Image (cartoon, rainbow, N blue to C red; front, top):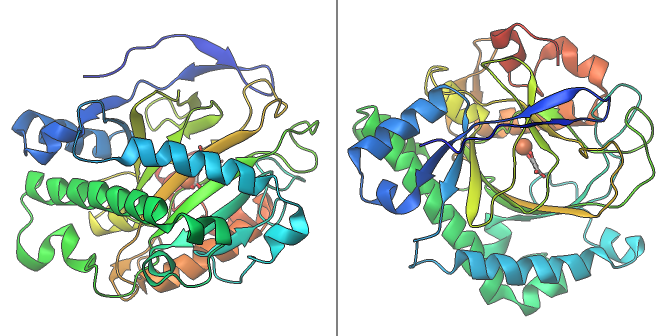
Length: 338
Ligand SMILES: O=C(O)CCC(=O)C(=O)O
Ligand SMILES: [Fe+2]
C-alpha cells in the first residue's frame, strides 16, 4: 500500500516539488514474515530505496515513548552553549558532537547548517565518553538504540529471506553484534537561521547513507529524496507513528546494486530555516571488516568506505562531484548531476 499524496510544494528556488509516494510497510507483518509484505519490501528497496515503516500496532517495543523522552532531553542539550557542547567533540565520525558548518553545503559556496550528537552503539553499550545528559538517562537511550537496532536487523533478515539468501550469504551474516561495527544513533538539530540557500550554513548536503539500513524519525518537513523514477527532488513528508527507512551503500553493494541507496538532502521548504528542526537517524552498519565491491569495483571494507565517505562529506560540492563517493555512485546510475 502506498500513501497517496499528491500535492506539490515550492522549494527554496520557487520550483514546485512533488511529495514522494513511498511504500508503507507494517513492522508487525514483516516480523511475521507475511509473504505479501516481504514482496513489497523488496520492491521498495529495488525502486525508491526509501519506505515508511508503520509502527502503530507494534506493542512490544517502547520505541516511540523512548523517542519522545530522548528528543525532549536532546532539545535541552542542544540549547547549551557551544563551548559546553564542544567538550564532546571528537575525531570519531560515529561518536561525539559535530558543530554546524564543518561539512559540505547543499549548494555551491555554502556549508552544512546542522549540529549533531552521535552516539555509537559501542559507546552506548560500554558507557564510554558520552554526554552527562545521556549517562543520566542511559536506560532510555540504551533501550531506544536497542529497539532501533532490533527493527533494522529484523528488516535485514526479511530481505535475506525474501530474496532467498541462505547461510553465510544472508545479509545478517556480516552484522554480527559481537564484532566491532560503526552502527550509530544520531540526534540532529538545524538551528533557526536567516541564511538563504547558497550562502553561509544551511541544510544537509545531498548524500547516500554509507551503511546498511537507516531508521529515521522526524516530525518536521525538509527531507528530500532524488526520485529514481522522475530523477527530480521530492519531499518526504513526516508522518506520526511512522519511521522512514532507507537503504544505504553497503546494502546496495552487497545486493549487487539490486537495492538502491537513494540520494537525499535536507532543505527548509520555504527557503529559510524558520523553526528549529530536529531529527534522529539510527544507522545500522555491517562489521568493520565486512567487504564489498565499491563504485569503482574495488574491494573495500566497511571501515574503509566509512572513512572515504566522511572525507567526501567534508569537501565542497565541486570536489564531491569528481569521485561520486558522497552520492554512492547513484548519480551515475541515474544519469544526473546532483
Ligand atoms: O535529518 C534528516 O531528515 C535526514 C538526516 C540524514 O539524511 C542523515 O543524517 O544521514
Ligand atoms: Fe542520510
